[in-house]
Length: 55
Image 1: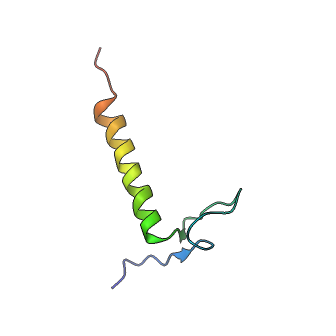
Image 2: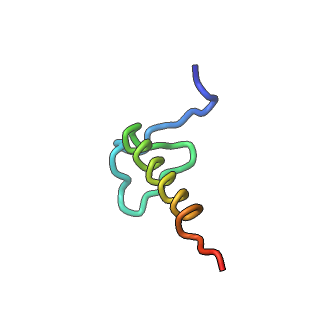
Image 3: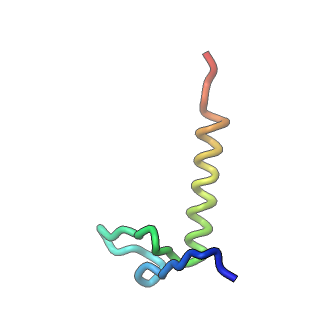
């Protein structure tokens, strides 16, 4: 059962070549994709709830 998204693996799935871009229809390996997603969630949480100061 899929979500209707047909991603292809970018290169070897580990490291993009220098200057290469991972297109919207591509992905890295699942562990790297999950790791980058977790990093994004942490950054968004920090920017949204921890960093703002109230005047």
